[in-house]
Image (cartoon, rainbow, N blue to C red; front, side, top):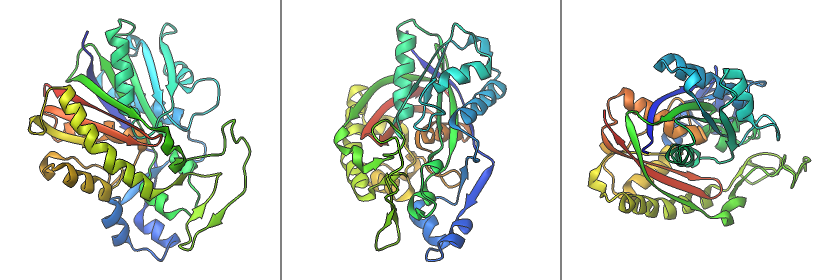
Length: 333
């Protein structure tokens, strides 16, 4: 049985941090420098008591209202997050209850970052193909802002908080075709939050600053930007080539490429490296930032509004893990 994307909605927290706000905290930077390098003008930040499950619930309610979805038809909830409410219970179980979904509904969390939406589609497709579910609510929700040190100007310019709700069903506007997925755990140390899990449950309080004033702390998000860039440059062109081959397509057969919206510089570099024309490469991060697992569904939502989801759409996610994945969506729009 084929699986389709039927509908997408997303939620952004109310609090907004603009480049002007950040420059007040980091006067050595300028608004123009942040905008030109990162491509982000503002980002939404979860409030102190707002969690990933709160945002995923709000995105789901928007999905039901915006697209006229009957919640009683949902028979599985998949939540992708790296900032769950608790170790246990599973946040997807909390969401099932808050949304008033049937108790015959399956629910589980999975922990992935920027490849999470693509992996989630693969899981949802498997549930439908196996006859286990007919309507899968795929949720992506992240509050990376809670992991970032206040003095970490690099990561604070890039990341924003958001959630997206995608209904994967037996019918819809885009069929989900074949996948290429990959993992290389050797890169784990290059994008990591060490504190909080059972390996390192207590704060290490080992904060230090490099010569540029950037914080390095086991208790907060650490990203080795250079190594992440090198990984992406090597993995993504191969990923695109492999997923095209798997779907018996060429680059010319793709109407739109929707990559994980990491930052403007990296995306432009990848676009040129793979030789994709600007008009076939979609950007949507100026007013939301890098929202981790939600960047692709948010971009798909906006591209659909603009009438750009036509024919074959190649989506690709890549990042923390290392983890990467891609598939082709065949749009009927």
